Length: 122
Image 1 (tube, rainbow, N blue to C red):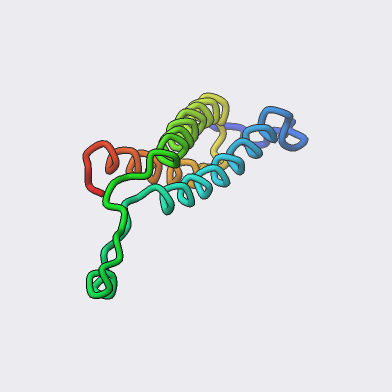
Image 2: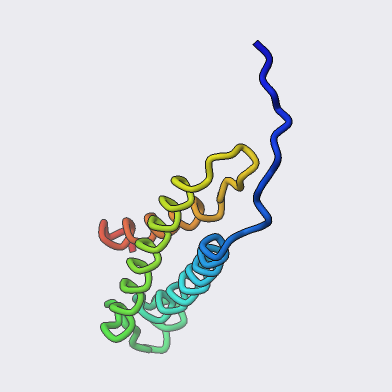
């Protein structure tokens, strides 16, 4: 049996949904970086030796003003990333379609950040 591999590619480029998913992915990466900035300001401060020597007080608890923003951004990005990944998996069926490794990397980093917060690693 001979398979005819001379098919005509009818796609003319990315459609509106593909472009909107691309911009959504870029915005999720930006929001993840913003969440990392909130993490920096929300986490407990380290007490270095110089701080102990000079009796400088440091904050040993999470800052309650930045923590909801940090967690909210992480949960929002996780929801958007999973939704984007499901849409792309359902939609991309050809071998020549992109694999979206950046979404998988973002998903792993978001789930790792949320998991380590709720487990209490930091």
